[in-house]
Image (cartoon, rainbow, N blue to C red; front, side):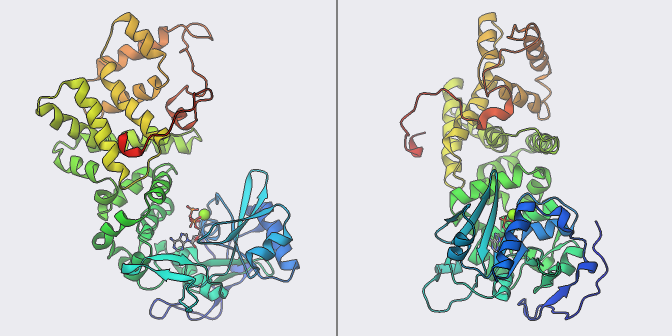
Length: 456
Ligand code: ATP
Ligand code: MG
């Protein structure tokens, strides 16, 4: 949706990358309408305003509404402290240590309400920088201007005001959204050093919005990429899910590759792709990601286990080949390769066991798909991970033309398998009926003692 021509006042362009003046875009000069905003978010905004606080819709929601998208969540910024928000809403709770926030809960919808925060060191010790400039705590309340410039991209720093429905712009974000540009606020290198995950956010948001990363924002990424390896591995896991399971996996992957981030995030896969001269593994990977995007677009569930099986398949194949070249027996080499690749990857991305185990099963089942003895066939068909493993086999055809016969064998086997619904249906294990079910925890499972990750 086009954004209306600018008829606003107070052109406040960033000086040295910092916001200086406010530009107000009046209601008739932007396309955001209340009917596109979650009624619960509106409720929160109105109640805050009626209690005398200022309250704005902010961040991704404003950005997405400006480009005609449908925000997946609505965040609010306010002058009220978390405790004041807590008192105003019985259905709220306070969360977070690093950022204290209020969540206002409406059934399944959660509206996040954050107090304006600053990104400045006021000497209170509430903001700490690690060596290298990494931000480890920032809990200093501030003005709305402070709140705007501590955000990452100008497109994410726009405020929709509930009192007059205008959009407030302290960083030039309105213009940038109109031009499809993703621009970091402030000095890009410093902002990446504060929080290296911003590099991934740049790639992800550019992929999602179809935006261009503005040159000065893109320039430092390749050099600073290694900093990403120091980010918390649990956070990198979360970011990976957003990168690859939000419907823009192909574009995200290409962006990571182009900006030198893939070799930090998935080092063994990047190395395996580089040494795979035919490009077959990359073709398969991209095809798998394309399939994931299609599933997301169709509102079909997608599974982290399948995703990581795909992302780490080149690494697995490479490790497997080298173990076999050393003379290791195939079955043993497969297990070792699966463990080794998982273990190495865990040092960057904290892939939880409930995903890494089915991921490994998908790999290990690949060799079992060449077994055709009737007993083994029916056992395999009943395997909870069969469907995912079969879908994976189908994808492998993009890397090699050796699997066509196997694929059609298993297609037939599935069609003929007796099932609860009669002929033609697979025996379905509850909650595990397709590749997407890996993330649904099996319902009846014995509690297992957690083993330390390193022993996996
Ligand atoms: P999405 O569409 O994925 O939700 P988003 O921009 O809303 O994108 P969130 O993680 O929900 O992303 O963050 C909400 C807002 O918080 C952002 O729009 C941005 O203003 C701010 N923000 C998030 N992460 C950072 C960060 N690492 N550094 C600075 N500001 C951030
Ligand atoms: Mg968001």
